[in-house]
Structure formats: structure tokens, C-alpha cells
Image (cartoon, rainbow, N blue to C red; front, side, top):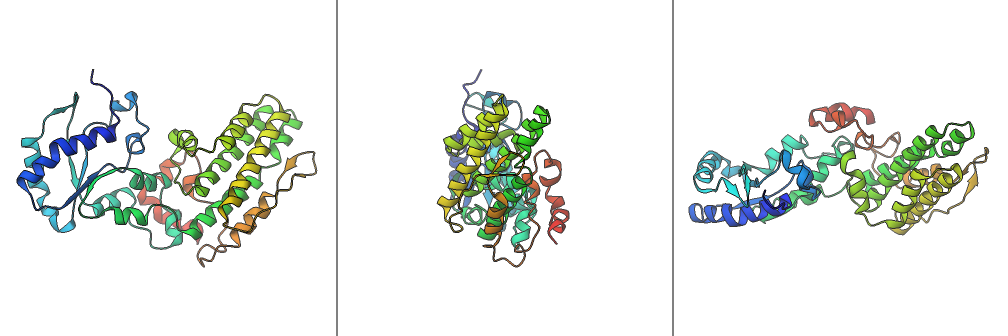
Length: 332
């Protein structure tokens, strides 16, 4: 059995050791870029031995400029004749020859044209386009990737305000559910709040969040250990007192993270009684404060619902570029 190698490392060495010499020998003046991007755990560096069962192998992407795309068929034949069929013990060697414009059209439909347009694009797909490694960049595809590297400031503010507003709707229910004997409901609501806090952390750290399979893995890599530990303790708590204290502590820590980012005036943390013996912070006030910083005419008065990407397990809706137009209409 071949020794496991992270797929991006495998593809990079395959490109440098096998593909690049073929290009230099046959097309010394051809300018190309190459790398790994789009779908798959391997693009994000999360792949392990289990990942090798599909969509995995020495298969780098070779990018041509639009004016050189006519060479695709010829290059395909040259690679088929000159590349090994097995590399470092892995079969299925292949080179995907394309252009950046083709990848963008296939993967997200088109580049965002305005602030609301950003909300119609799958966050996971934005991550896939921008997180992968570039091996060589003679035609400067990184310039376009930089334009997609994270949300524009007003879009970020809108998403942050939305997360605090959504969280505020359930902030007292962790305690209330338990008060009426609904421990399962209390745990579920606690999990809802935990996810909102985690999504806020990605936004404050200027990182796209992946879809649910890799959400927790990516969150841990944000290195916000104190917040991670409080959320973990809240979700695993066996008593309502512990659950309420830990999820409240997590909220306080995320507010402190907010204040450290200087995107609004410092928000004063006040722990209050909701009126039914439930401890809360004033998340609605924080949502309003953030919303007040939005200058985009398109977003300033939008209902604070966030993006479809921030609703778990609806990826059959938000992960399809053909649905962008329908999603866009939510914000009209």
C-alpha cells in the first residue's frame, strides 16, 4: 500500500517532477499557472487515508490564459504520452487543463458584482477557490483569488450583525427549556447558539467557514482555545447550571473578540436577567450597533438573516451556482 501523502503535497510534487519538465521541454515559452483549488477535503488540507477512496490522487489543475485555451487538446495528448501512470504508488495520474474563468463559471457562476451578490455565493465554495495552494503562477491567477479572499467590509458587518440577531432570538431558551423539563430542547438550543458563536469567530478572524463536515475542524484551527473550550463544555454539560454558565461565558468571550477587532465602539458587556431567571447579554443591542456601521445602500436596511451558507444542511440549495439568482431575491 502506498504511503499516505497529503493530496496537495502529492499534486505539487507530481506537477514539479513530472508535468513541469514536459512543459519546459515541449512548450518553453508557454505561460501557465498550476495548483489545487475547488472542491474536496484535500484542498483544505483535511484529507487523510479515508479521503483516498474518491476524487483524490496526483491530479493538479493546469491553468492556461484564455488566449492559449486552444492548446488544451494538444497538451492533453502530450501529457498522456509523457506522464507516468503511477506516481509514488498512486494511480490515476491526470492533469485538468482549464482557465480560471472556466473554473469560476463552473464553481460559483460568476464573480460578485455587488454586495448582495456576495450573499448568494456558497461560502464553502469561496473557501475552496481561495484556500488551495498555487504551485506556479505565471499568468497571475492569484490576483483574482485575492479579490475573493474574504467578504467586503459591509458584507462582513451585515453577516456579523445577522449572527448576533439570530443568536438573540434564542438566548434565553437554554434555561427556559430546562425549566419545563425539556433537557433535550435545552441542549438543542445551546447547540444553535454555539454554532452562531462559532460562525461569528470565523467572521471576526476573516476566514470563510466550510460546510458542516469540516466546520468543527476548521473552527479548532482558528486557535481560539478559550472560546472552543467554553462551547465544548456548554454542549457537553449535564446540568442546566453548567450549560447556562458555559454558553454565557462563550458569548462574553466572543464579545471580547468583537471589541478587539475595533469594527465598532467597544460594546459594554452587561449580564442581565431576562425576566425568567435566565442570564443573558444584550446581543440585540450589539447587532444594532454593528448594523449601524453598514454604509452599503444595498445592505444597510436588509433584514438580518445572514446568508444561506450559514444555515446548516441546506447545501443542496446554497452550494449550487444555478440557485444564486433565487437566493439573491431574498434580499430585495
